[in-house]
Image (tube, rainbow, N blue to C red; front, side, top):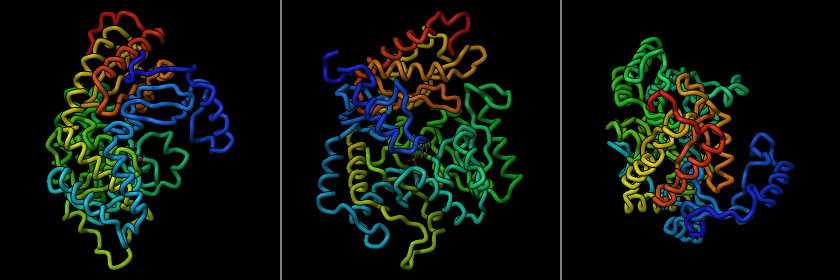
Length: 460
Ligand SMILES: Cc1ncc(COP(=O)(O)O)c(C=O)c1O
């Protein structure tokens, strides 16, 4: 591999410098944060487009877009230029008091690109903060403090968001401090339909549970949903689910909050994943790809919902030091304009189909591949111990992640069972790179010893 757009490894992976940095980090960062093992991680030094260079000079292909952030590719020139221009003039302002002028431009642009009449923004610094803002808005707008969320959901780890996040390992140590009342209901996962129903009826089954929960608890003010579950394992619900949720929210006078921190800004092949189903939520949570690399987020709502906030008379009841950060706003304006110019939604759709075509043969070739699914460039490969029982195989997923890294591919595993290989590359990744990625994943799956004829069971 000697062309510029493929990985090139100069040392073993992780190389000596990464291993030494890992040792140093262990001595100075809380041990609960960065996972280090002899196989993991590599320390990043620089990145451009879909390529990442580590501290040892190894070059990797990034199939994560750095947690779904760098949708336009790492170091996108227009976004970097916006950062340089803005930061050399004004690096910090007073977000809710004397704001940066560029905050106005970003708020206007968000109103333009988001669906329906969504068009009043509250900025923040992380996806979790956007979720927190949505939860506060819901209680202001409805007066009802309880929330419905879904099994498998990931909404972030600050306390309000954590209350809505489902995974037990994130919640359990802090359960006693989680104050918000959230009921988690089954999410319609067609591969693992809840309630013993089949894939075709799981949307209806889950909607019925939502209807029951709304009738049982008049204190519910909002339904919080990821239109496609991201960290929950790239789960695309059946077509009746999102429209059904919209209908139930309207019927019961509760808000529908779409958490598109992961799916937003073209990742799923639409600007926002709700557009696959023609649904307009009351509140939309955004982050990650919005600026292609600066910690900035937003909760965008319908005017009549956002007007539940009392008008600021000098001291906002919800703000933060870095709200509407000038560099973040300038980068986001530039990134969104670039997404429009490139037609990034169509690009994600086309490249997602291209990658899917190349991945589908893995189902035939490797018995451990249970399902390959997704929309756009949000793709999950679910690994199972055996296809009939669909028992998650997190070890296999980890071994593929580690083997892929040694071949120059950066990818993550996710899902509640940690058995789903998650592919969310920069949307600007080339077709040759996608082909390389599919080939390498094929090799890694073969290497972990699960490559055998898929047996009598027909691939799904
Ligand atoms: C759907 C969703 N919501 C919220 C968050 C939290 O965002 P952050 O990590 O920026 O707080 C994430 C992060 O992965 C996410 O995927």
